[in-house]
Image 1 (cartoon, one colour):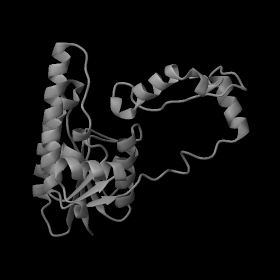
Image 2 (image 1 turned 120 degrees about the vertical axis):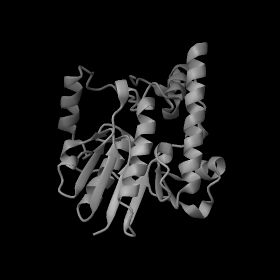
Image 3 (image 1 turned 90 degrees about the horizontal axis):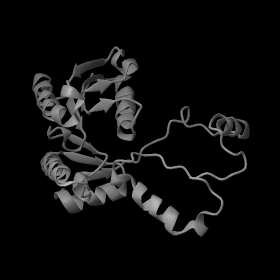
Image 4 (image 1 turned 90 degrees about the vertical axis):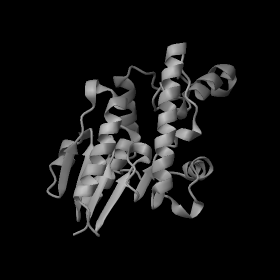
Length: 234
C-alpha cells in the first residue's frame, strides 16, 4: 500500500484551500496510508483507519509562529517515512519536500497593502519571507499542480518553474453540499435573513482583509456605477 504525506495548515471544510486539502486527504485515505502534518484536522478525517495525524502547534494562535514548526515537522516526518513508495504533497511554500506541490495561490503575484508605517514594515517583511519560501519550494518540486491557468501562468512567470513541470487541475464541487436550491428553500432563506422577497441581491463571498479576493474592485464599481446595478441590494 502506497503511503502519502500531506502538509497543509488546516484540513477543514471552512476555507477554500482547506476544503480542497480535506477532500484530497479523504480520497487518498480510502485506499492509501495517509500522514497529515497540520495545525488542525477535521475530526472525521482524523478518525479514519488509514490516517495518522502529526499535530503542529500554532503558538498564541499566530499563523506566522506556526509556519516554521510546520516545515520542520514535515521534513522530520518525511525522513521517518523514507521509502520508494512515499509521495508527498505540500502547498506552496509551506514545506520544501521536493515532490508534488499543490499551489492554491502565488504570493509573488500580489503586493500586500497595509495602513500605518509599522504595519507596512511588518507586512512587507512577511511577504518577502512568503515569496522566498514559495520560490524555493516550487523550484525544487518534481511537479507543480495549479488550481487554475492563471495560477500556472503566475508560477511560471514569477517563480522560474518550467511550464512542462506544471499541471492545471480546477477545484471540483461537492454536489451534496452545493445542491441546486429550489424556490421554496430560497424563499425560506430570505425570510430567515429578513430580506425582501422580490429584490435582487448582490453577494460577495470571501475574506475582506485580503485584496486577492477582489472585494475592493467590486465595492468601488458598486459605488462608481450605480445605474449598472439597477435595484439590486448589496
